[in-house]
Length: 494
Image (tube, rainbow, N blue to C red; front, side):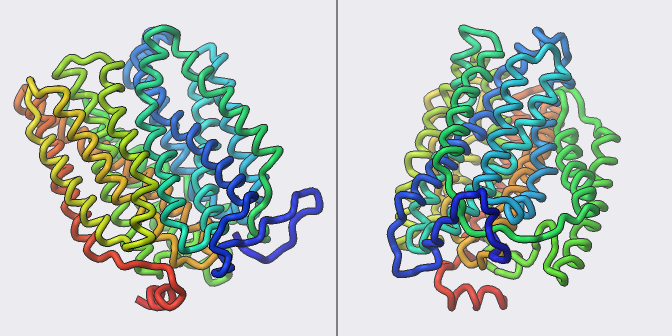
């Protein structure tokens, strides 16, 4: 967050910037409280992203809607995230840590409460959009706060702990919802999340202190308006491109139109930001890309997200439609991988602090290629225990990529670019996730329709994911440790 204006009188004082003091290698109790509060809230909002997926068939019958309509509960969430995240650089500049947190968790809690009492599909969709708006602010807020508070030498370890929230939460989502739906209605999914969100809001309101100082950046209305067709158009177009039934090979005109509008609007958005950068007033500051390791790390995460999101969608389709496994078993099969990813996160973070990114990202990307290649050989009688093992290896591979890439990418940025760098990463992850889902589900649908066999479609899609993952190996080789000022200065000129 920028340092251009004093805090409002009613706000608590800002926390001393531990990251700016190299000799201060230990986090204060106040800093730990801030990070833990944000981490718990992030865990809840990310858990919410995947918790509803298993419930979609229940919602179809309960709300009397068809498959293409109910998908809007997922698509609408993704669209809102894609549109709101680019504005979070501005939001985090203008609001104090406490204000930004209360805005994010307040929106999320309000959306969750509305979902509990929803009387129809339209009301539930509005609730999901409100939830997504809060979720979009939370992740960049957590990243920006860590960059501001945590000394460079400890960032790998702290980012490793963040992996628990980022990876265990989505893995737990299907399992938790499977257990709830086995005994209760879909409303209990939101009732499960609501008290945790309220508790996080109360704790945050009481204990959260401010980090850094607020700025006086003005909101560029044209940039905000462009984010809707730019990021919204891309995510919607990609999600509809992948919205195939196994018997359909046609490409939706609406999807192509949305993508075309998205690409044109994106170009206009980028041109607008480059113009505003001359006056230090962009909505999303693209100067973060001047730092070579930020660019390499972002590309590596995008490739990993393409492969990850596609496989997260494909594997349940294969398990339920080919192996005829129920939703609870599907959730339980994905659980060991998610837990392994979270539990290895702190360990991988310490390895990063000791050895740097390259050994970790190269190992992770090779394991990712091998895991996806194994999935490309799935048959209609593959053993469930083997799938659980491959999925666990894939999740550990992703932990080996994400923790070092996050840390290494954000390390060289100056404090003024912390919130913008976090927003850029979060935005591109959403777009990459939508693109990965669209691409792999389309390949699955086309190959299945052409062969009349879902297994052939599954194999073709996972083989494509494995080939995409090879790009991650190449990017991993390009990784260099970032951190000390000399490296950061050098990186900015490459």
